[in-house]
Image (cartoon, rainbow over all chains, first blue to last red; front, side, top):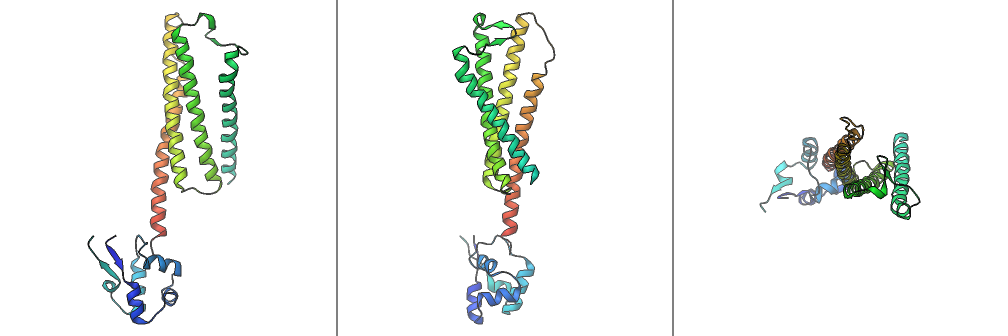
Length: 68
Length: 164
């Protein structure tokens, strides 16, 4: 899929661990892992909003379009 | 759950009886243990059309039992609450295809028997056997459509599960 998730990069920049983020935004670590590995088929606006709020970033910092 | 158990049990019973029936036809009939009579017409006087009717009937019967076998597989998955499994879709579609084929075969048999009756001056405009053929084709088509519905439902379920 040409959409890639840069959640790892942002997490590293903020010095936050995956399980901490999962706790803050209220999803399971398994679901966060699905999101990080790019296996997710869709992301809810509410989840995106919670991630942006927790990591103090913009949606474009997390999602990136790379042409195949 | 009770309905699943009842469904599985009934399909199993029907499959076992039909399988025994096929074994009986294939292995017992040739030895002359059972008597073959078609329209009160002794087997010694049969022409080629009578044999074609018997062979087509037997093929239709075997196809029906294969359809039942696939329905058994569906019932087994339903019993373990795997409603949206790909195997359910595959076996339901196969079962539907076999039932449709069996229905077509029995309709061909009905037509052939009707023609034979016509040549023997036993004209009948309506026969209840043809309704059974139509019903079999209807059930088969419904299974095929239902398999498509389950496949769509499975895709929606996967989408829902992978939406974070």
